[in-house]
Length: 218
Image 1 (cartoon, helix red, strand yellow):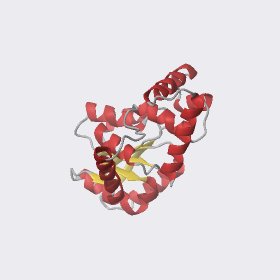
Image 2: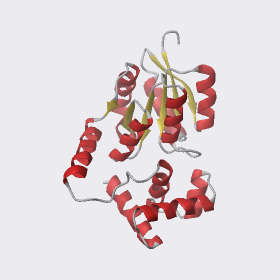
Image 3: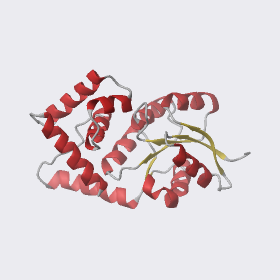
Image 4: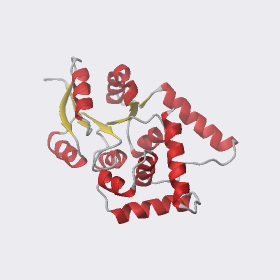
């Protein structure tokens, strides 16, 4: 292990973590030394062992990955973070970078790009795929030149997480269980989202969430 860059993976999908670990550990200068499934466990590793790089999944069972990125960046600005997501929506890449992440990789593309992304981030660079870069540029251009459109920019990270899960068909009780929040808190988030989009009825909010979810998965 001497001389190898030590990597911490924060992801609550065991099979994915195992595959990532095997892939990264094939490299002579890289090693996944830690793999945890919650933000609290990640902090224990960061505080005690100080890895060279943290890889964070956006969708964690007990917290939001972007919130974890913000916290790491604030407390340890010298520690680079690479974000993974199964969602190929440029909104997440933008939010991840704004939170302080040094790179963003879609899980669907991980096999061909993870090592490249890791090396780029460890070298002090920003890594995003050409596809994500193009989508981010298109969003900026359409925002400036086109008519106002339904935008996720107005949502907080937690509101976006609730909106995403609504789009996947989860009800309030299921969302509360997934995010480890109370039903009252989920209800508050839904009301705020509805207000921000000027929607009168809950059914309109559900439809908007489902429509967005289908668009993202195309």
